[in-house]
Image (tube, rainbow, N blue to C red; front, top):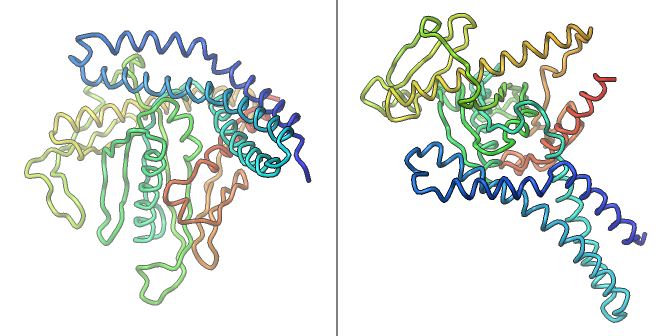
Length: 373
């Protein structure tokens, strides 16, 4: 079946026009100019955290503008290639084959860009804090938790997103009881928030000497990273703070002082542990920041619940089990909300989860539109 390139190119240009209307390249250029001015300030690095935030935002904003501008150029190049194919009879088949490959590549790149236009939630632009906790399944669940941690860190690495593992609680035999890490990039929260929920692993357990199939679970929590403008004040009287010695796998001490911090918010019962910083002061600051982020998320959820109650909508948005990773008797990762699946489980656990995330974002948008009707 031959491809009508004129129709396809017109469709690509229409999709890009919609993306441009939402992303507003002129505003991106203005933002880049302002950030570049800040980045050039001689006293920028007097505050390393603020400097890192400025340079990171500048880099990501430049990359976003670059992707949009490059896409327009790629569509133009595709049109020129098709025109050349019509004129060059000798190389026509080869040029059309190359044009078909470029068309497929551009479609996928546009689909990825289009996903950004669907991220319009209140905190979607924020960086993210992700916590993974082992659920039912014993040592297999702890091992699964460590597999998921690696999966998300590899996903971030593929995209060039800075990450920071803030806390790891090792299980006795293998794997992790829990892990908390940051992904510091614009829209990390909006992108990864669709990963929140219960994940299920089915496989022949490497910890079962009888070679039986086991099912285990892990819970993923995603919250937006707190910013100084959020003003989440927590009175000292509402905090219970315990200090303890940091430890690694098998209880091996990695610190000779009580530098790890466990912070409990008494009114809500929220507990945050931090042990991966070098000092108690740094761990305390990191714990407070994550606690503030969780309280911000809790406040947002309460507001959303109140709105749903007023609208008479008591339908839950998320099921208990949102994705299954099956390694035995067949190999398949399947999202139970969207139907998205991938038979290459090795690639998925190595961070190839963009298709699942993009499908989840589209699914969430559809759910939101159905609720508004």
